[in-house]
Amino acid sequence: MIAPDENEISLIVRAQRGDEKAFEELVKKHDHSVLTFALYMTGNRLDAEDVYQESFLRAFKRLTGFRFESSFKTWLLSIVVRQSINMRKKRRLRQVLSLNRQEEWENEASLLCSDQDEAEQTVKTKEMMQLLGKSLNRLTDRERAIFCLKNRENLKIREIAELLDCAEGTVKNLLFRACRKLRQEMEPYFRD
Amino acid sequence: MKNCSFYQKQLLVNLFDELPVDDDQDLQHHLQTCETCRLESLRLRSFIDRLPAAHLDSSWSRYNRQQLFYRLRRKKIGKAESYFWASTLAGRMLRYASFALALVLFFLLGRTSMINSRSLPSVQDLMTADRLIVTEYGEISPHLLDVNKININADGSFEIVYQTLNLVRLQGKADDPVIRQMINNALQAENATVRLHAVKAAQFIIDDQCAMDKKTIESLESILENEKNLGIKLAVMKTFDTFPDSPAIEQILLRSMLTDSSEAVRIQAFKILARRGALTAPSLPMQSTQNNNIYIRTKVQQLLQERDVL
Image (spheres, rainbow over the protein chains, first blue to last red):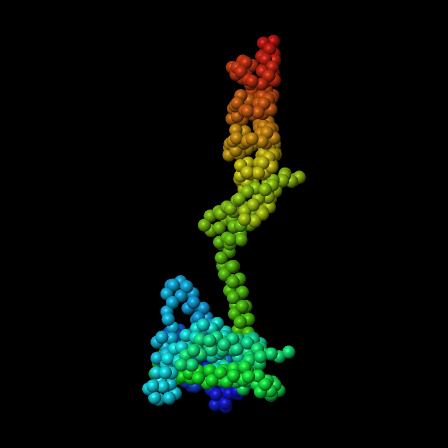
């Protein structure tokens, strides 16, 4: 577990006492990764925005229940994972009802930009993101959550197991399965 | 026995630097000897390294943050649970104390309102009342579904067990109008045993008071006309037998003697009328010839002969 720094502890305690400014500071600190993670999890801009809003509002309401047993980020991500899975369930139901499946990650990749500044690299990264997004869509909710938590958020396998309330062995197996599926989807592109 | 499949799962864990030292040494040893797993390791590392690591467009992120702060400031959600109330011992104690106080107040207010509303019957009263409920607006009759049983006590009082939404036991004297009403209801009950009880109760009242209200007589007459159970009909005849001489009763008996489908009832009616001397002269010849019961015909002829002799 990565222990929260002193400043973060102070912010959390102040926010628990009802200090909204302190909570806003916490939001500023984590909102970028929450939004990216939500986008990876939902694969859809609108759903990611909803998940982002609802996760922080829920975190604000339940902040007094945070007992510093894990890092604040892990606790926050556990809320985002639950919200994202719920959102995907609703979305699947909507798609079944409307029979009108929208192609995801077509426009969402435009929200992302590369670390590198070169225009050529940016275009390539966006194409890669589009491919990754489509490949992630083929994973189950838990596989996707585990892959994103490990690959994007760099959480330890033990932390992911605690967050998802399952055994470490299960996390390893699901991570292995997720990687295998992604490789099947993406490796042909990498060879090019 | 560890095979390549096992080590290939370990490769991924190793790639994220989470393999314990012993397992790592074991894996490295395997990789030195197994060409397939070594190539797989390289491919996997290459795949993970080439996965795009992108960051969000900061304007989108900023927009969402503003939206969130707007919602937080406008208090569209309930205010966060106060730290004092949720996390401190004093806060929790105060919370429990205020809850207990509210409970006591609620109980006291409930009692006061019950006392104030005593003039109006509660639903419970309406369901279980054993007689008419007198309110400032008038009398309310408990909703009667069925009479279950009528007992006649040794002291001459009645016990009527009846059904509203609950089972009710009603006790009262024969002159009690509610008791009379309940017996009348029971005369029309669906259950034959209850009807029989009601007829016997009516009989007891007539025997005791030598009188019966018009409504009960009508109900008894209705039983004679419509009842299929012979035992009940005969009980009604017996009730009329105890009734003092009355032209109305004699008319009912005469009609039964002439038209009732049951011979036993016709004979019973004849006997009562004969005992009362109520068989008037003009009707006797008709009875002797027209009644389809041989007993009645014979008895009528005997009566006519006795009159001729006299």
